[in-house]
Length: 274
Image 1: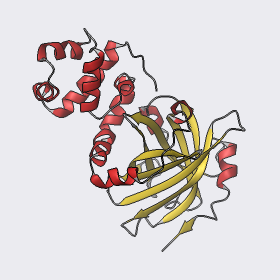
Image 2: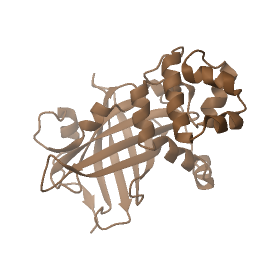
Image 3: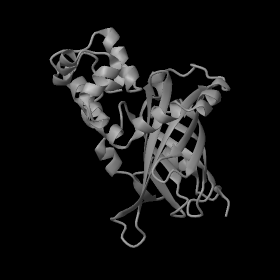
Image 4: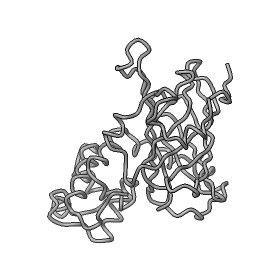
């Protein structure tokens, strides 16, 4: 993550962002039982909360303390995409609690090995024969590793215009040197996807290769299973410039990493059900 835990300016900016979406600072203070005058000092950047109050604030918003010190621009990108809200709602579902309790979750993969921002490559199920480049991020929120990623598809009639945008929110589970993911699409709210990935440690560049499967409730987004390559780009959360770079690419585009394209093959092994 990109953060400095003694940076009151970043904390204050991010806290203001969160409070703006709550509608009332007074309501936040009442719920977390923190004095309004003291809370105003946090919002202004004059003071950082003591450790106990820091944990109370982080728990109230369903976030980890380090994320509260993220770069404010990265933080706004995450909040504006409603990723925090979506995952907070999922964590409260009894079905999710049962799902987690039924899994054997290991901490065999250190956070430092997997958290951060990735370019995500797969063959597109909409633009046949083209490679879909999306933006993918893994981060820790309290006790869970979570992820989100964004896909953008240009118009068939005007390639410079983005016609479709899909946003996925999910959880990551390290199990037996693999990373399992489960997520759902949050704009149309009609697709569930699952993936399993393994790190490639023989290369100086950081990659994870795996398989993703998705099931949608519409004919337009048909069920699919396909190879996915994740190329690590750095720590932190997604930035706006990374979101601008996501699109559908010709498979011969030299900007696609050679290792990713070798893993993906020619796309002929994508499984789709009509």
